[in-house]
Image (cartoon, rainbow, N blue to C red):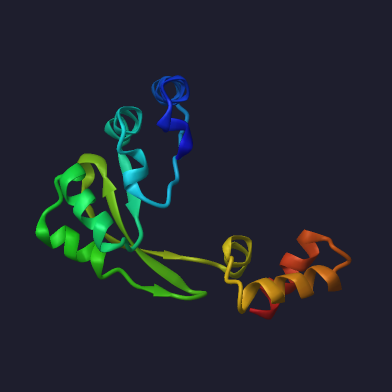
Length: 149
């Protein structure tokens, strides 16, 4: 999340976060690693978030998460052992504010899978072939891929 690395953009993101809540909006922040938000502006963003969702993390990230989020040993172990069943579902660790925390399963339908996948070996060639077959129409290609699934 490059925007929170600099004072000007970090301050703007944090102001947007506070305004969004009062306007009844839902702000989503996505990053590969929680430590991307380690600076003062990222910390402020996270301190104001009520929900956080984590996929499996590297051991280095786990140590950072333990400290930053005050996770228990059991919670760190849950995150370390999350599984992904390619093309079907991924386990994630959900922190839902004061309402609870634990492992959930995020299931994907075929359309969502084909929109999100970036597997360079199996999926990119199949996506490109479908685009070609669909005369470069992404929606037609998506429907073709979804039907084949």
